[in-house]
Length: 324
Ligand code: ADP
Ligand code: MG
Image 1 (cartoon, protein in one colour):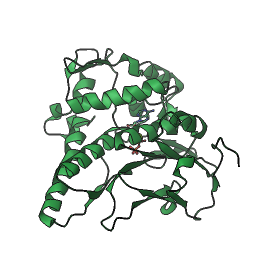
Image 2: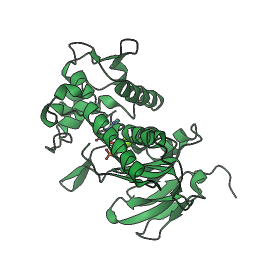
Image 3: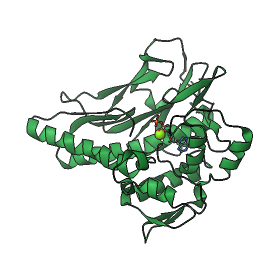
Image 4: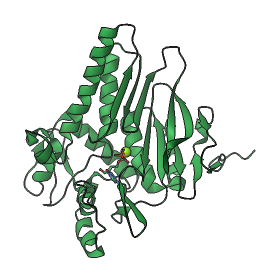
């Protein structure tokens, strides 16, 4: 999955703990293989990747996929529909145009962008639930599950841990975190929110228990051209990097939702994003913009602590409807 995965399991039974760790880790391998766009290069048997096969057969024929891939697509399209396409897994061709997939960075011409944008549109994905098939109707269309796969794999790993009787663990897949239970001493797990412009600094600490915390930022994968930062979270409406914020952190019951929403809210920005999550009582978020303004859901008040490290402004009440 092109990222560092760290799992910490706490158990009084070392043998069980180790076994659980291995099982949880293998979920990342499994989901990583299913969703590998570049399976042709990365896997000895590229056909193992659903995403590779679906993309290869775009404009040709429907492809049978696993329950996991169906579940990821279903979740993705649910949020795509609710957000007017701010989250859209068919951004694949645009990701390649900017060179974010194969790491051949370039700023595309408007002409090229227009051409590739015609291939984007989550509504065009044909899913046959009964047959368990996925079909992309036009050659050149591509799905890219980079905005959900790590979160989904995190949930699968946590499910394995729970099944094995583990009740205290922390899973961190490149910033997709799930805190299972609490620390062995009963206190909540602590997760830091990184300063988007300085990886050595933490801007806030969150206390979490049986919760996912996922951050999307413009600092994960980017390149500079003429002093402008181009990064890997695209606004599907225009095919260019989203600019309203520089990082979003989402706290939600599952890592799948938190992963999708962190990417989606990044595209929507703080104002529309905060408005959006009001419909989801268990979902909260922290946004930071280029001017280092931080806004966050007031529901987080008793579990977040801001450090004073980095000269930003915390707007505590900006989205509070109650004025006091
Ligand atoms: P990271 O992969 O760094 O954790 P995200 O979870 O925000 O970051 O996912 C970014 C990835 O999601 C991109 O690398 C790309 O694969 C995919 N992506 C980019 N823009 C969108 C979008 N608007 N909708 C859905 N997926 C996207
Ligand atoms: Mg995401």
